[in-house]
Length: 167
Image (cartoon, rainbow, N blue to C red):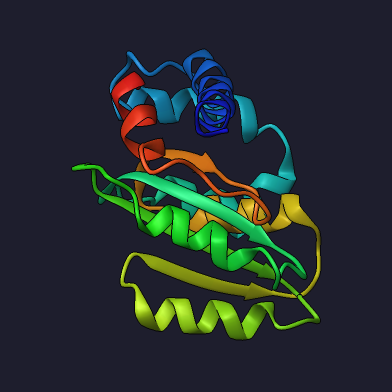
């Protein structure tokens, strides 16, 4: 099961990495940003959206930002977060959990974890769907790389180490 979870994580990480090189990881950050501007600024919605400005002003304080969109997962979110905070790695990472308007006890559970662990950021929004929650997380991320974990899943203790060594 652990090997399968690592393989799934690596798959998603490779998908993200394969998307980003079209913009070009080999270029200097400023020229990569120019490429992004050429593609996305054609659409007026990006000009008005805080998501875009947050990406432009993003700091890279962490090696990895793990984004978890959560909606009514009180039965599973504890295992998910525990698997993320108990990583065996020397890499510096943050966990951003976005509660997408849960109506069960998810919000209370997340608040307890936020108080217990420094590396966890918890954001709350009205229910707008997983994509919106992930976009909010991306906008607030401070990692060089971004990864996603579903709120009803858990990962192996070497998840972060394996992903970042591969990167």
